Image (cartoon, rainbow, N blue to C red):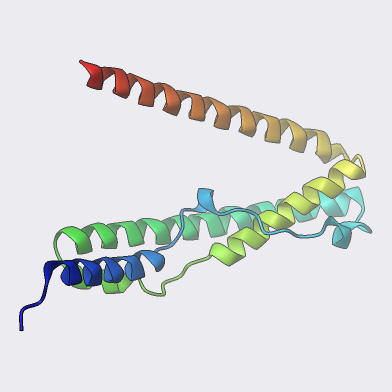
Length: 157
């Protein structure tokens, strides 16, 4: 019995998709999970500032762990696809912190909102930092777009 090429391609694609689903997500692609700011309603401005600092540190820590895991998965995927397919089995499971990081980002946003609502001193600093972050992101997107346009023009020649 001869196995047809389309069947082999379909099975190979299914196996690859299964392994890709197990890959850890890059931390910058993880969105905040909604956390209600109401749970911080009774906090004083000092308590909000302290909580912001604590959550910020935890976000940084978990972001580092997630980035390490995503990089490890990317290397395993590259090695698996190019050299040694059994390396793809190392992608399953792992130490993915996607849910925890999303929750922490949500907590940080909730704390920001309540700090702004209560007009805490830290609120102005948070708004300035957010504005700078958004400006930097817009500049990155603009630069990436410009690079794509340059590449398209190069291809026309």
